Image (cartoon, rainbow, N blue to C red; front, side, top):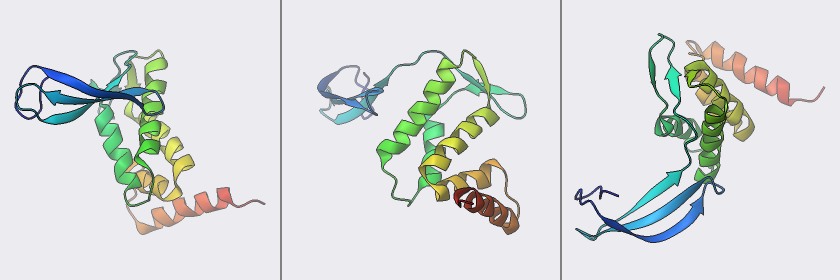
Amino acid sequence: MRCPFCAHEDSQVKDSRPAEDGAAIRRRRQCDGCGARFTTFERVQLREVSVIKSDGKGQAFNRSKLEQSIALACRKRGIEQERIDQLVSGIQRQLETSGESEVPAARIGALVMEGLRRLDSVAYIRFASVYRDFADPKDFEEFAGSIRDAAMPD
């Protein structure tokens, strides 16, 4: 593994442990060149998935982009990073096991919406505001009202 600090080719694994409920392996490494320590994650990748954007262009699925979007929606909500990692891993697993090599971006957005709905209602509304392109405060009000109505028993 190349060192991110000095670009030296070799490093030693100092510690390995399961992460993300066993979906990944976290490795602490030390560079043989400069001695710096860094962390890597190893995950199973079942297949290459391309994301088809709304303009019809495709790009490779980017796990870190998905993580950043979800983390932004969950910011300052007190949600443990491990729960966010589990959500991201679950979405990635669904995409890789779907049998499709090309997935519309809207499908990924829907999977994120469903996961956030179960995780945290405020994060769900935050993500929805971007995903559904809220243009007016009334859009927030109507969406929040629909969540409140769905949560209230008859």
